Amino acid sequence: MAIQVQGVSKQFGSFQAVADINLEIGADSLVALLGPSGCGKSTLLRLIAGLESPDTGSIWLSGQDATRQRLQERNIGFVFQHYALFKHLSVRENIAFGMAVRKFPKAQAQRRVDELLELVQLTGLGNRYPAQLSGGQRQRVALARALAVEPSVLLLDEPFGALDAKVRKDLRGWLRRLHNEVHVTTFFVTHDPEEAMEIADTIVVMNKGRVEQVGSPIEIYDQPASSFVMGFLGQVNAVPHTSPLFPSATDAVEVFVRPHDLQVVAAPTPNSAPARVERLLHMGWHVQAELALESGQTLTALISREQFNALGLAPAQQVHVLLSNPRSFNAESARRVQIPA
Amino acid sequence: MTLTLKKYSVLPGFGLSLGYTIFYLSLIVLIPLSTIFFKTATLSWERFWEVVTDPRVIASYQLTFGASLAAALINAVFGLLVAWVLVRYSFPGKRIFDALVDLPFALPTAVAGIALTTLYAPNGWLGQYLDPLGIKVAFTPLGIMIALTFIGFPFVVRTVQPVLQDLEVEVEEAAACLGANRWQTFTRVIFPNLFPPLLTGFTLAFARALGEYGSVVFISGNMPFKTEITSLLIITKLEQYDYAGATAIALVMLVVSFSLIFVINLIQRWSIQRYAK
Image (tube, each protein chain N blue to C red):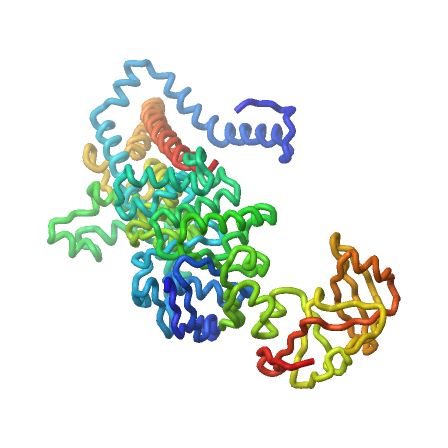
């Protein structure tokens, strides 16, 4: 195990940032820590790095208890959201910083800098200063700087958070490829589910200082452990328990369905409910339909263009909806429960 | 730097503001200073050289520049320390302490001089303990240095403080993650960022000390060749109605001070320009 977090809690004043977290991250894996802002994900990352110290619990790095280890000794690469580059040093000097303070031989350090510049595709920009680089380039310098000392673990705190959408998208794919090349255990924080699903092998979903679920992107999406996870990973419809759509539902259960799992049909079928088309939004390859049930509650359905054309949908039209893949959760604990429809 | 007035700029009024700046600078700085040149020009070259190289005058230059430099250096070190403490730590009474920093600016310099003399005189509060140890402060170059340190103290604190405040904590955290200890983080990351404002503060304190008169005359004792600063010599010449002689010495002061400050500014420019685009 590259990282083991055992019963770690951290409080700031009266605010419980992280509560009793247990987590294991395997060597060479690429893991995303996903959650809304303020859920304690950055705090957890900083605890692992040693930038904060836990109130309780212990943190193990590469099988060693690092809880009392100083930050300098943990051999961690940390990438900050706002790069935190040394603006008075050139790109080369920034990358060489870790090697300089550890007194690496100069020639060796320079060779390593050359390799890293090539790795992060910044060959030729080594003598520039951070102020002369774009945001994406700066973040790549920060990454090269963190990788220079060959860290046992690479931690990234919202690494693409400060970049615009296009650069962000490019860097995601690039980080994925980089991980395949350098094989360092990578743990990154993000609040963007899409980013987590695109880059990571494993996703850790956090909410209110606790881990909600750990799993592969597909597990997290298809088998959400709680209503929070389901809601955080994409749009959901809450199905009223009085509707004929889910007859076995009770007050004690909440049923959710994703818009693309809501089927729209012309004729009634078992477990279907009548609905009226309220609004149609054309989103390119698919159409988003807002449907009102007889109870007045609205549901959102995503349907393909073919289906849309086949049904000949128009506003105010009467249709029937039924659920595929509904997920039910205990209304009190919000945990997933298995109830047959 | 070319004067292309037609060039479009988002900031309007370039011509007006430049004109105003030059006019104002002429009125406030250049014209008064030029009178020094004109008055000095009434002297013959031999007479000028005789006045400005008089051994007593030379001794005063040495004292003035030496004591000012020492005072500015002391202020650079301790001003940095005070700025550091004011920015990095919180303690009771911090705000009062912060306000106290500006006091040397507000106090009439003569009052500062008298206060320091009273303290450091052989029978003064501090002087009575220093005197038996053989440390004489009042009426010695050491006393002059203390007075100059006092009046120049706020400069370094006030120039370094905002820069230190704006320094991101993350940058220090990044250095620590890369294996730098506190000392390495300070010397390699924090200090290079503080160097330009430190140099500015140093220059201001130095310039202020060069021209100081009020606080020094009380504590120095004004002994020729020993504790006589150049400003005092100039006043002495004026009191003897030797106006040309006074301006001659002033001119030398002016040229040397300007050259020094100009060089320091160049160093500062260079130290920033390297990385600030």
